[in-house]
Image (cartoon, rainbow, N blue to C red):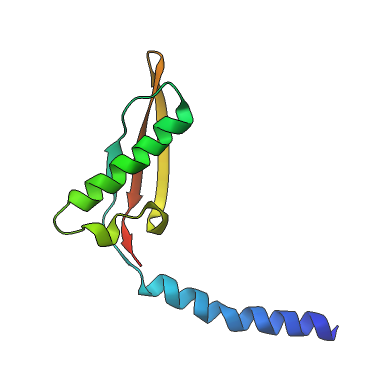
Amino acid sequence: MRKVALALACSFALFPLAGTSAEAQTCRDRVTAKGAPSLVRLLARGKARSAWSEKVRDTKRLGDDYASWKNAKNSRINCDKEGSRHVCRASARPCKA
C-alpha cells in the first residue's frame, strides 16, 4: 500500500513539469505541404514531412525555429494514390521549442 501511495505522489509531482514545457512552447497556425510522388508510400510520407519543413522554413514569420516536424502539434499525413504513385500531404501546427 505504501508503494502505491508513493508512486501516486511521485506521478502527481511530475505533472506540473510536463505542463510547463508544453505551455512554454509557441505554436503558429496550421501549415500544409504536398510532397513529391513516390512509388513507395513510406518514402512519400517522408517527402511530405520534408516539404512541410521546407515550407515552414521558407515562411518569413516562421523560419528555422519552427521547421522541426517533431516539435509540431496536431500533425497528420494523408496519402492518396495518383496512378502508380503515392502522394502525401503533411499538415501540422509549427511550434518552437
